[in-house]
Image 1 (cartoon, rainbow over the protein chains, first blue to last red):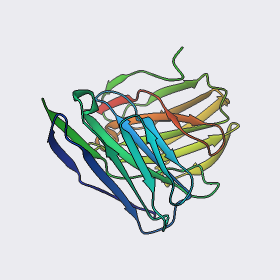
Image 2 (cartoon, each protein chain N blue to C red):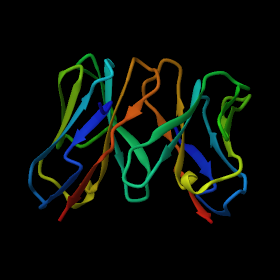
Image 3 (cartoon, rainbow over the protein chains, first blue to last red):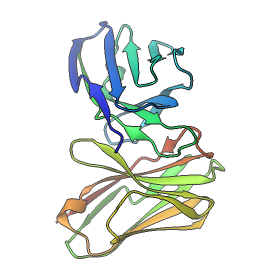
Image 4 (spheres, rainbow over the protein chains, first blue to last red):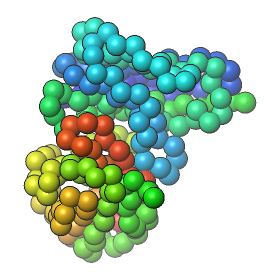
Length: 111
Length: 111
């Protein structure tokens, strides 16, 4: 089945640093999504990307939909303690309702 | 005014028991989902219902039986629970293939 390879699996950074994570797929997706999961909670949507090459920002977060439609990245600038959590990429095919998730990137921030 | 709610939040039970998890959404969405998150935080879709009709069944054991009494509710019944069923189960909802919104999760522990 479809699989997403998300990297890195974990990151340990200092507060104020920028963060970058990415997802690659063996197949094409028509929508790329980035979710964040806080401990004990469900995933919350951060950014949705609908078009190849699209670059979208949400505050300090920026995500891009790769031109090949097989990859996406998420950047977080000037990290703060509340950015701690697990970040998931997810891909969705055309008209499909199923989301395929990456393995997650666990972000830890040292104050 | 929670958008997607699940009950219970925690469920601890013995192997072999039968249990149910309930999900309700007040977003007016027509599609609901069940996802399973394992101990490594990997999220995988189990089922999807659109207007009370099953549209996705990802080769889940038939001990798992979803039921959708109406568009706003999707319950998950699990028969003869096994140790490997221990996980966090997330309900989600969407309008068609649009953005999916997740519930807070039900943490199931089978002893």
